[in-house]
Length: 226
Ligand code: BEZ
Image 1 (tube, helix red, strand yellow):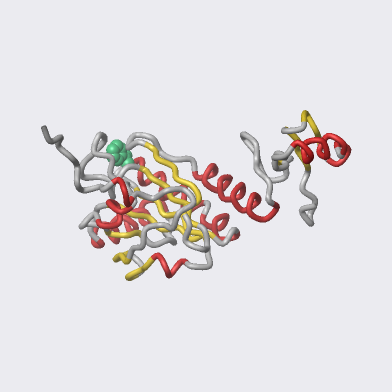
Image 2 (cartoon, protein in one colour):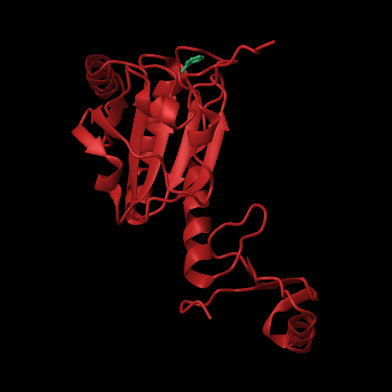
């Protein structure tokens, strides 16, 4: 017997960490934008359920407040929902009128659900007509580096998204990893040795690191990263 399938979101095309982000060309509040337009900068592509809703409004205020922090890190913001361009324009104008805040980033009007479907932003278990609160961090080469999914009822923490960007950029620059609850300036994790010889070397060189055991060492990054 054939099982019923939801063909609107083919599993094969969903974004995967470490793989190229799905291409798009979309109508936004700042004109037509394509994924390629963001080449050379980091991109935080995020969806919200609907315009003129309270939690989403607090998120737009939060993203706007931290916009300078994203900019400092060479990160562009791009919002999306399944609403018309006119609804988006009216909503960002309303945010400016009611909160005195001008939304500085573009918002995709994805009425035909093309981008939402390509990125798997619609979770039919939550809503068939709204995107969930998804975040895709895409690096300057167009590779998906992180994904966050929040439900309709929970507003996201924008400071955590900035922290995630800091962690990714630090990992790329210094070839290290970052521990739980890491904040810039904290010690980082030195890559774990992957041969017995390297493990012995690590233990022998323990003065260079804060060494707990051969597989677990931390270090402070100096200004030069050494
Ligand atoms: C909101 O943004 O307030 C919201 C949107 C969809 C479902 C629940 C809350």
